[in-house]
Length: 115
Length: 107
Image 1 (cartoon, chains in turn blue, brown):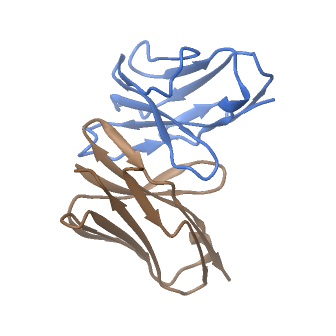
Image 2: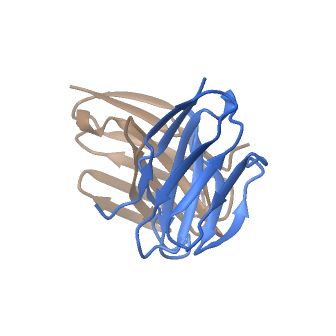
Image 3: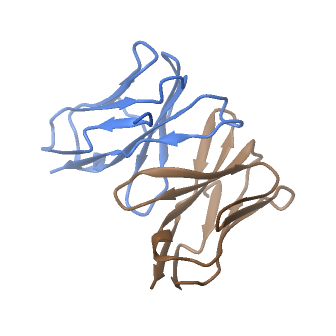
């Protein structure tokens, strides 16, 4: 499978715990995006990487959230001291070309439930 | 106000019906995208267009740049078309997403 891969697919955790999600984009894609989606809503932008550089972060991304893409390949999204409001689907997407000219390919998402 | 508005929010159709989902946007865009999301989360890109019309199988997408409006049509709808259809626009390095239209096609 050469698509965007995310894991884990589901994570249930207790409030206050840390969680980490991983995204493996399509191998030649230099752009990687993280989105958060709650029920009945469209994806909300969290952050964006071009290669290993994190170029943009949403105001939605509090200090408890951190994302990395150390070698410009896979990326991780860590949420520290989780809160119930963090419960959502976390989507990763990758693209080869500038956004206006290339398609965005999504992973299956990582669903987080904070109890 | 969301940059991208979709209508309707929910749509139920009988198998075989012609379906139209509408998308209006309020910003200048590089391109407009129609996406399909099935239960469980995965999102698939259906179309990317910046002018005119595109067709793929039973799906047709149109865009009117002057009116900042796009439509997604499904001809001869089938229960397997049941999904959430999301309109998104790209501008700069960003995507802006609508909240989606939940389509249910009844056999």
